[in-house]
Image (cartoon, rainbow, N blue to C red; front, side, top):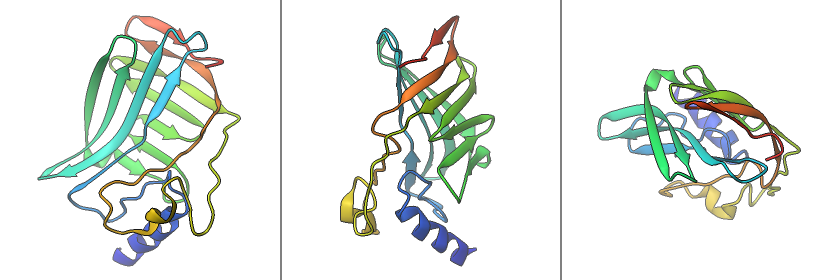
Length: 170
């Protein structure tokens, strides 16, 4: 298992959006930030799925933030609900799915599916595989960053509390 995790981590260096924490057991955090804004800019949300492995508190989570109302909610999941894909950027947390092409959410306060079209990728190189440049190779960094898309279009709707919000064209 140790060798398998090593190879997954090496592959992930050249795919910065993919899960990077293979084999990590403690003192580790990783999350993916989705900013979604309606075409008319009246609704702006951030959705952050991730894992936190700190001081015996090991869990997966989905944080949602309403940028207009300036509110946030943090939904905890058992760590066993966290399921990253080793071949591409795709993460499941329970019934919630996240990838570069879409998200599907089923939380008490927000449900729906959004698709992302015409993704504009960040093109790295062999010596600079992502937005962090050569720092991607430094093994003791406190935090790493990767970009999935620097621009794209959204299609779909979300039921947010008591209203349906259409993100199409956003």
